[in-house]
Length: 360
Image (cartoon, rainbow, N blue to C red; front, top):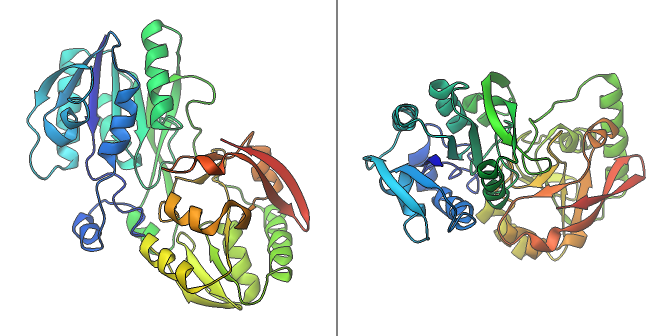
């Protein structure tokens, strides 16, 4: 089987430094200390395919070859990667994949990369995304790099059905200004195995939803402990807590609250780690992504495995409205060093009402 394989080298760099994306801000991400993460995600995917009867067609160096050369993988280089890559390089590689008649295209990146790929490919070749971006709202992505390997092996055996996957993306400029605008940009044909491919992100609204958020927020606020640092994650459900308290919160970032006051906004990983060292009691409040169930690893990479180990699983508070919970069979984690979070987690879904959810 011929597999087209490409990596967006800058995908995900903005996550830990609180840039919420990397489009157009690579230099700023580097200035803030961001490191490339896509290559490590790519290697986790590739490792699971060692020895398989697959020939990878891939660009030179950091757009593909660097993730393949240390493994027992057959590959052929089909594109000279420039030092500084752009969306045009992704599109050029995809055009070569079409010419080479690859059976499957696998890319490592986020929603922006998915858009670039599908702009060229449309539905001509099955496409699978390996998650490495800051936000991954599209349903073209595997749950994790490792699950991506399993999907490809099933595809080779003929055991994976194809489904239409939505390609979604947001306006990153609006995103950084605390506005969430999600658009449908197209569809891809994706190899599918239940629980191995994520759903598209869903948004919930309406009067009933707002009332549920208020009930949750009221309960959280009434039970907040004094002299405790609260880290508030992204999302409208968590933002309702700040609204009840009468303080301003960044809708899509991580903020710090202490004794009813915001003491840090839109925090990067290093900011969070610094605060944790200063306070003896720390709690974290997060909400899962609608229809996907991710509590960590999508859109909040600044809450890293390193951060979570310092906070402790017992100090994580997960909140979600009943409507959101109805769309979820389980909660998910896709971060390095996140295995200690697996098991079960209480989710607050109303005023003093909890549901026990499995975390994978």
